[in-house]
Length: 254
Image (cartoon, rainbow, N blue to C red; front, side, top):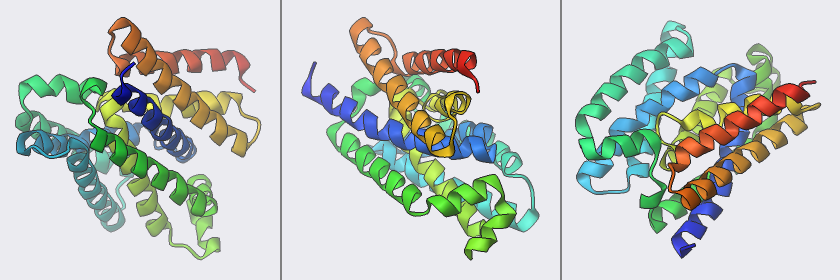
């Protein structure tokens, strides 16, 4: 194993932990499909990074943050459902990104390219992942109550609209750092599938969150290792491993 691959594995632990953590709130909030659609909003930013020769992850972060601000503003002004606004933005960003990004790099953007992850990108991903986990645990009570019963979150003297924006920002960050590993099309393997499997296994909320994080880490590390050993796409292998975990969880559903 090369040093860069070992660093990638270590970074993957933090990225998967952040993704599994956010995924548990997505399942509670019933926003799983929205997260998958939102990932496509990163494509124009990634395309600009490739074309202008700067870190694609930074372009993805900027595009996603612009996307969530647009979604949040439209939702609060028009009262349209988040999924509806995201759907419009998703296809628009997908078209723009596909137009901008070179054809040779399009498949890598869709399915991930672990082999091309650079050390600066690994550092950025790890820092963002740690920051996401820290913010979630700092505002855990607020985000949890908002995910379960948004109208009751005012009891904590917090605006539901502000909490919604915070959650969208955290989703955007976890999508941005996960794209390098699994790509735009397969990002749900790091958030939605582990959380769905964890919900079948857990007996308590804390157990649900912990199981979601654990399954996400196992899926990503397993995908990276299997992909490296057998020259397979790590993103696809991550999806298959997380899907296998979900299938097994059905037999243990409580």
